[in-house]
Amino acid sequence: MTKLMLRTAALGLTLLIGQPGALVHAQSNPTLSRQHGYEHGYRDGGDRGRQDRERGFGRNFRDNDYLVGARDYDPSFGSRREYMAGYQEGYQAGYDDGYNYYDRPGRYGQLYGRRGDNSSGRGGGDRSSRNEYAPGTRPGPGGYADAAFDAGYREGIAAGQQDQRQNARSDFRRSQVYRNGDSSYRWSFGDRNQYRQDFQDGFERGYQDGYGRSRYSSDGGGYFPNRGTTGAADTRDGAGTTSRTIVVPATRQWTPTNIRVNQGDRIRIQTTGEIQWTPNANDRARAAGALDQKRTPGAPMPNSFGGALIGRIDSGQPFGIGDLTSIVIPASGQLYLGINDDNVSDNSGQFQVVISW
Image (cartoon, rainbow, N blue to C red; front, side, top):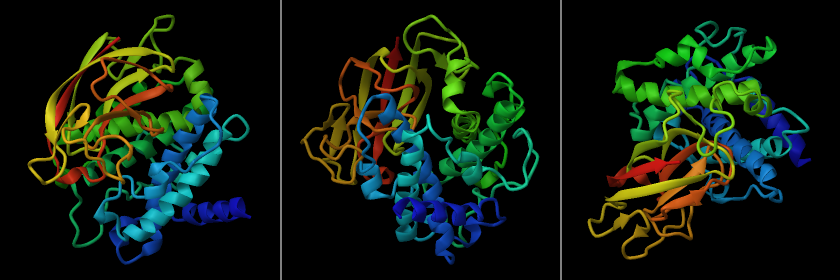
């Protein structure tokens, strides 16, 4: 019965995808707030389920992201309560599909594809309205990044699905939309280069889900271009460098490193810097976490010190990094670095992280 209810909810939400002006009316239409949460939750739950299956873990979707239910929420999405409810529904449905990805494909195309779009993601079809916001609201720092990521994700879904249908070798980099990285950009979103980075991050992730992750990983396709080597295998520019410096701002929950890794890889890490992780000037943290060893229940890792440096692969389960100088990668995908905090908007400072392999 539960699965039937989830499928019914997913179908109802699917019918709303791609409708012009969706977020423009988000505050006055709780259904759209719930839809936005559902889409985010499905994506996150799908990654978590896939990674749990690959790592041999038992089925368990009730991690902190699911329980809090407000990951990536921005006030411009409308009702927080409806967003959270949609997120939890989507997370469970995505987890089920991700955990059973050998037996059934995910429903990424139905949930995120643009209605009436049979193009390769190179500009045809109806535009998603995920870059529109409710009247009278101004997105927070994460809101514009979310708009860019979502726009890229939808374009990537379309491109990946077309390449898969045409039996073409997967390669997200050949798309002109990906290379330009500014589709749906608006001046109000701020820095175009930052938008491009978030858009390309979303496009790459969407391409993987649209093409199909198992095949995408096995045929190369720019995903692991240095086949036969060890360590982190890919960077967004395809240069295959062996070291990269990442700035992790305290005001951003998750920062993409643009580095692709394989499960079992060992990477070396050097972290410097200090952040303030609450409005209180005394709440300072280094990579290992809060200097006074405080914790915060709503953080991605509630049992670890607040403000600590953490990581995740795609949207999978977060793991601690802290002041470690090397870690073994727990899953395959793109490495993200983050701040262990429940509200990053009132933080300041940054970590500088040198990753090598």
